[in-house]
Image (cartoon, rainbow, N blue to C red; front, side, top):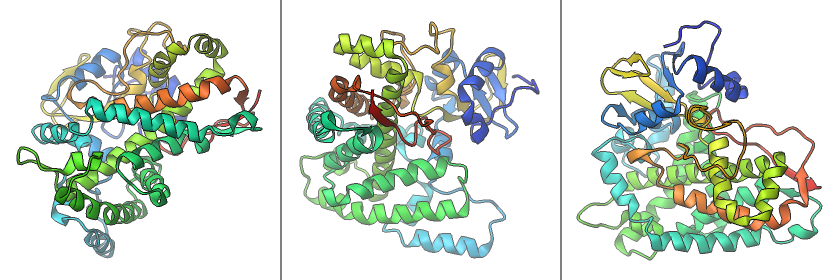
Length: 422
């Protein structure tokens, strides 16, 4: 483990986010296992990250939920009693089993056997037939989002395509009525931003999360119970119908749907945005793609490597374990730095170059038993968006204003991506 005083990295420090890719190179070269001042162990090299992902018997997935989801909330021991009462009142108003909520493990933060059971239930909804249906839905929505683009004097990539596409897709496949599309985005934004922003863990943040969960639950719990009693041919029914005497409880289903919605929307929105930015900043790669649109799937894979929407994940050492010559003690919190691993020169030739012909596999969607269940949907949305946008893309350029990163310290993306005529 590096003890070099000149190297500083903390995953939740905004200053580190602002120069992340510069820091990644320092970590990769000088500190493959770096001990942070906050007591975490940052692992950055590709082979080490993949090895940790592949060994769930040694590395627990538990911290992912605690660090990135915000449920159940972590409270400081010295939290004032009046604040505890405020939070308890907010939690008690939820139409969910409170004791279950306080102990529930969502799929992104569960280990076997809970993870095995939850993944088996969720996998019912991601059959080849469902995925084929997703593609038809995506193509229709992309077409609607791009209506009128040819005659426009500009195009707001996020507001007109990258945000509404995944929101409408997830709303459609969960049978959410159109009047609640804005709620889907609001719920997603809250979960994706508050637990990973600069004020993460504050009382105001926890209260806001509980308020969002109340709204979300009040909408979905009646629908969950209705699907349980009378299943329809939709994704929600796939998740909650009884099969082999096993199904999700209402609390499990609400938490899973919330994570699916937030992670899916944020991943797809930022993958689409990051891809278009990279293409416009690398006109040689855009020219390659225009000459051969068959490279679109490869362009998406390169984009998710080059600017992974989720830059890091968490694990906990189940026992003392050695990684890259450093012993991480039992209970040690590990940051697996996906963004750095995907730029490791030991694995990728010219890793800082955006190259849509690259074939080397990445770790942006994970590896092993925790490989992202929504990867097929995220890829399909990004491919659909780029397929629809590509014939128009050379007519635009990025606006002259600086690209501002989103507030999240975890997710890589931009607040706005305005395109103007080239």
